[in-house]
Length: 423
Image 1 (cartoon, rainbow, N blue to C red):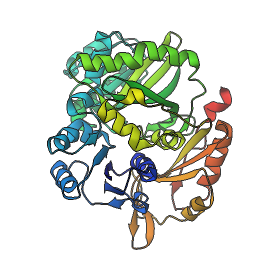
Image 2: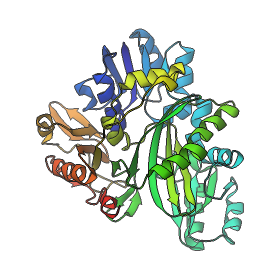
Image 3: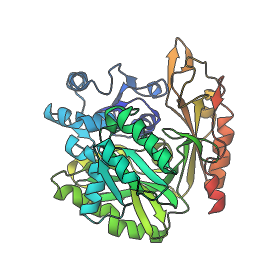
C-alpha cells in the first residue's frame, strides 16, 4: 500500500523507519520530512498544517494510509479533513485530540471520571489567577492550556515567581494563544514515567514504558525543552504500578472519551507521576512522544502498519502487542544555545558509522541537505538511540554512538538515564 506520514522530526523518522520495514508498505511518502527520512521515504515539501495540499496530494498519489505524527495538525483537525476526502487516516479526530489540545479539558475530564491527577483550577482571567495564588501553597505549577511545544509549564517556588509566570503565560503571551487559558495545579513529586498506548475507540493496548528528560542541562537544570533524551523501559514502572494504571487510568480514559462523544482512535501518551499516594496523570498527549518514540518503536516486535490498521478498524483487541526483552536509550544531540538561540547550517559528519552497527539508530530531528552535505537546521538535531541487553548497556552504547557524530556547537546532556543507577 501507499503510506504517507505527516511530520518532520525525530518521532516521524522513527515512525517512517517502522513503516518502511512493513511488508504492507509498497511506497512511503513523508510531508515535509527531513534529510534522514529521505533515505527511505519520498519527502514532499508540504507543511504539516497545509491541510488542503495534504488532502490533494493523498488523492493524487492514491494514498491508502496516512499516519499523522505531529500534535498541531491533529488538534487542528487534519484527520477529519482527510477522512472527509475519503483517505484512511491514523490519529484522533479534532474532537478527541482536544485531550492534548486543552489542558483545562483534560483536567476537567479526569475530575469528572475520577481519574487520579493533581488538584487544580482553570483560569481565563489573569486577575482571578493572581488572586487565587495569594493563598496558594508553594511550590505550584502553571500550565498554558494549549499546545506549547512541551514548554508551556512553569514550576513556581513562591508568589513572586508565580506572578511572573501569570504575566509570561497570560499577559505577555509567550506561548501565544496557548496562554488564553491557564491551569494552576498542585505540585506533586515522585518519579515521572511515560506510557504510550494504541487505542481503537474501545480497546487500549499499552506499549513499553519510557522516561523523558525535559530540562536542557545536566542534573535537570536549565530551561524546559522538547526533550533531551529518554530511556525505555523505566525500572520504576513496576507490575504493581501497571496494574493500578490499568484499573484506574488507562481504560478509564478511553471510556471517558467515548462517554463524552469523543471516541479516541490513535495513540494516547500518558505522562505519569508515581507519587507516594499512587500514580497520577500529569498530562495526556494525543500522539507518539518525541523522543519517546525513538526508544519505544525500535523495541516493538509487531508490524506497525498492522497495529495502526487495527486501531482504525476497531480490531485492536485481536492484536498481541509485543516488545523485545531488552532496553534502549536515546541521547539528543542539540545545537549549543538550544532552546533559546542557536546557529544553523553547520555541517554534520560521522553518520556512516550507524550503517556498520546493529541496534544503533540515528533519528533526524533538525537536519537538511545542502547539496550533498548534511547540515543542522534546528535546535534538536539528532536523536542517537542504542539498544542493549539492559538499560546500563544501552546507555553506554548510546553515549558511545553519540561520539561518532561530529558538528560544531554539538551539545548534549551527559546524564540521560542516570536514574537507572538509582533503581
